[in-house]
Image 1 (tube, rainbow, N blue to C red):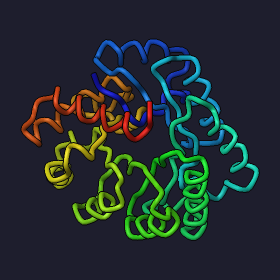
Image 2: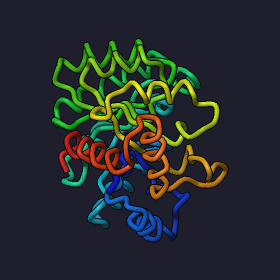
Image 3: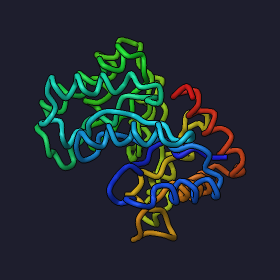
Image 4: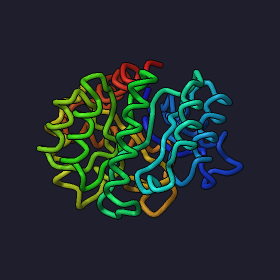
Length: 256
């Protein structure tokens, strides 16, 4: 059995068919889905929590994507901290730094990321980190603000092996998506080959990053098996081994 450690199935892309999506995932051997808040607007968080409380095999996280850091103030942080007290919320995030698009100024992203790191420490929850083209600053903030007390995962990891090692040295997990199935992702597959399976998670980031052979279609948690199969091929182990180890990793991190 597999766990999709990062999906946005509370989004409008699944309106009216969420139950069917969850059932297709279960039929594909995906036992649990983590519905991640913070993508788009604040409502994605309350919707993730609502969904988690509607399905036994769904859990939630709460945060705000770095694209929207400019819209996060004291009121939003208070609302999210209150949501984080729900029993089905297993992490703070997604949060982090994205210098590729820079939809929010870098200094604002850094400030808000630091505030979410503090929230993770205060709530004793792990943190789900989005990082793109910002590894050095992300590592520094996780180290300086985390105080050695932080657990978490770098979701949709796409960096090089040097960045991977920096995160692993902090005790973080690295999560991989359908990107590793893409023809032009050879360098990332090399990183997959080097990262210990005991420090890896698999995810879909649904509805985005649909793996081969479904590229061009909406992604969904059932397809996390394709990510696991690619990890297995790269590491020359069985899919069952990948499923067993990554599932244990998710459980250890999020405390299901």
